[in-house]
Amino acid sequence: MDKKILLELAEMSEQSSLIDDGLYKKYDVKRGLRNGDGTGVLVGLTHIGDVIGYERVDGAVKPIHGKLLYRGIALTDIVRGFQGEGRPGFDETVFLLLFGRLPSRSELELFSAYLVQLRNLPEYFTEDMILKLKGKDIMNMLARCVLALYTLDENADDLSTHNILEQSISLIAKFPTIIAYAYHSMRHQYHHKPLSIRYPKQHLHTAENFLYMVKGGARYTPLDAKTLDLLLVLHAEHGGGNNSSFTTHVVSSSGTDTYSAIAAAIGSLRGPLHGGANLKVMGMMDDIKEHVVNWKDEHEVSHYLTKILHGEAFDGSGKIYGLGHAVYTLSDPRAVLLKEQARELAEEKGRLDEFELYNVIARVAPKAFSEFKGSSAVIAPNVDFYSGFVYDCLGIPREIYTPLFAMARIAGWCAHRLEELISSRKIIRPAYKNVAGTRGYLPLIERN
Image (cartoon, rainbow, N blue to C red; front, top):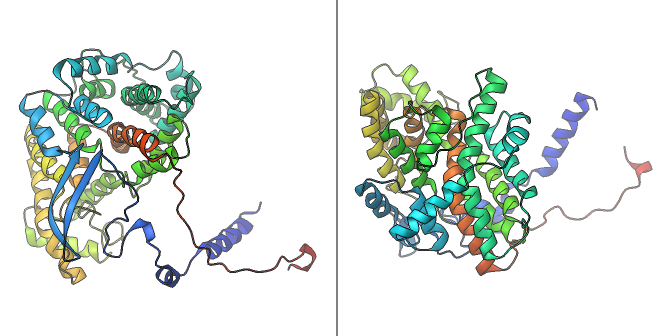
């Protein structure tokens, strides 16, 4: 079809898809499943995660310091617990999310050993699904591999709890391997770099094993492994209302298989409004570092942030990325924990000047935002504000940022899938009001 005709059809499609804003108000539609005050519409119940960022006092939203609970336990306490004992925490966190309680020492050892057994991909899978089939986007390659694993599972459609748990644990174990191999394949195919495929090592924990597969054994430090493990724990779960977890609920409610549900969640996370926030932060920070001469000058930094807010700098969006959150107000507990680790990492890597620039922005941006908006709305750094910087310090390429998010969040996805199938047992089907009206059918001969 002629390109001009396609453009005309696209314009027609846009016009027919546009719904007047006034109709949303008329029918009291909760756009984005958000209430008028920005809070989420209650659509379900969960035991798994709780995101707390405000209180309701006399019907009004009151900002408070944020809390994130995994199975009722504060994330801060979980992190302080395993780090205080000098050990990694991701496997323990996965166990907690899937089974509802913390494991004993022997249970944790058995569970970690089980994950190790499942890390390797099926025979010929790497060659056929990752190396032969080219892919420029690792998230798409990850989704493709998940769907391909369905074909190798003799019990793929079995919805028994035991079988879903086996599938879930297998996918959680294999995600790091798939992502590492997909990255090397993309790098080889499109950037003409040497192809390095490193098999998972049994004695390395999840985060360290991923660093080994991506970078090699001599190219990361113990602090690197500790920091990546923390990031995996911070991203493992965030309540049932985040877009990808809600996608998992919706798709699972139809009774479909685990692979289809997880592939759908990957598709959701791939969207830049969900999983790509830290990439936007990194782009913004590159721009700030280029245009701000004195990174320690709060007035100069604030002036440039104001230009960003006016759409006169960076990408013209008028957004300061990495600040504010849909639920958290005074603070994001994940950002608080990550900031502590980021300082230690920045010291090791000789990048304290950059870390301090982040702190300057965190201090002055809320005031610049308040003056620009003419409001008293409270904003604070979210986890994405620091995560890109931390990944960069770890030497992790930007193409892997969102896949790493998936590598962690699949633990929450699988827990929510189980909860949906066991507790809800009803297909999710919200209502949409048709506002097009009615009209008669026009015979072809009478159409212009």
